[in-house]
Amino acid sequence: MFTADCLNINEKGRLTIGGLDTVALAGEYGTPLYVMDETQIRQNCRRYTQALERCYDGRGMVLYASKALSCKELCRIAAQENLGLDVVSAGELHTALQAGFPAERIYFHGNNKTPEEIRFALRENVGQIVADNLAELQTLSEEARAIGRSRVKILLRIKPGIDAHTHDFIRTGQIDSKFGFALETGEAMRAVELALRAERLDLVGLHCHIGSQIFEVDPFVLAAEVMLGFFAEIKARFGTELTQLNLGGGMGIPYDEHDEARPYEAYLEHAVAAIRESCARLGLRLPTLLLEPGRSIPGPAGITLYTVGAVKEIPGVRTYVTVDGGMGDNPRYMMYGAKYKALCANRAGEEASETVTIAGRYCESGDLIQEFTPLQPVAPGDVLAVLSTGAYNYSMSSNYNRVPRPPIVMVKEGESRVIVRGETLEDMCRNDCLRQG
Image 1 (tube, rainbow, N blue to C red):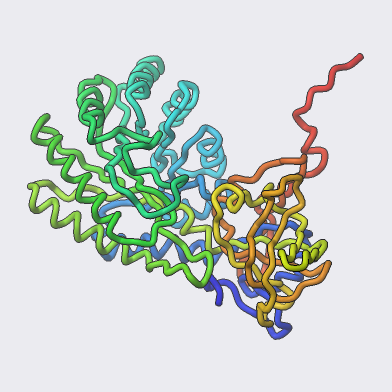
Image 2: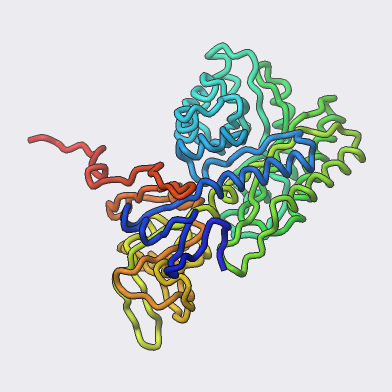
């Protein structure tokens, strides 16, 4: 019934997360409210690190893709779980450093890093930078020279030309993508040549990311084979054998009972088998393997709680259940029809006998969380829970209509605490400049 181990139903028939009554949490902190379970997050981290240790003798590192949810507490947990960190902006980098995350375990991504961001990363001694385009290689060299850095470790982001079966908006490995260097056009080999000739750049590996919310194993296997084939071409042409292979992330999570998410180990076992076979066939040393799970770490561990406002039935058309949040705290359905499982938190044990459309409070007709979805009968004042919202919800939230962002509460072992404060009405005006007179 549920999409994560941390969810259950108590003796009152109410939804619980980490053993805490969600209706009580809504009463204590208000709604909308993001709730995360720390134990589930740590378990998800350990599934990856343990699988890497078992399948590949620990020759590598799991990097948490912080774009899924970037805040100090998530960075702290990732550091304690011995993960690395993937950041894509100065803001994500600053958050990690503020949390005390080790700079040497940070990889800086992004398809259009500004000179200021690159300078910031270099000054903070970020471990490695993943270069995305030819102009960036030039900027990296110039900024390294300007601050006196003799060598900067980099990877090149490669488009392996693989069609991952997912939504167009989150498919990134094909040739028609804004990310990375294309193999088919020769651009990738040109980037390798320029990087190897640059006096201050140390090309150590290649990176790829084929997309997100992928349930099939074969695309990851094919990506490994294509990337190692390029390793071999580079070795043959330049006599240089790269040492790091970053296969990115994108492993899918269950958003409802129809999603057949594979265990994390399944992705890794098949990819590692392909890596071993390819290296043996191509005469390559086994590379250090990097993985970048994002949503699969915090996603299942999070829910969002709302209070039901009105229930509006349009006979023969649909029934709208309106809540006190919506596209401002979860824009994913409006953007690309993302699936979610919803239930009435105070009647979680009852049958979902109604078919409703969950609508938000924002002034847009498209402000919906789900359409024609099963739900228990609800009335104004009930608490509605939307599951699997730990990733890409707070990260993508906005202040549309000047509605404050909700807080994030973390639960662990029967206790709850705020890890991101909710915004206030005063926060909405904090950066406004009003002309006097």
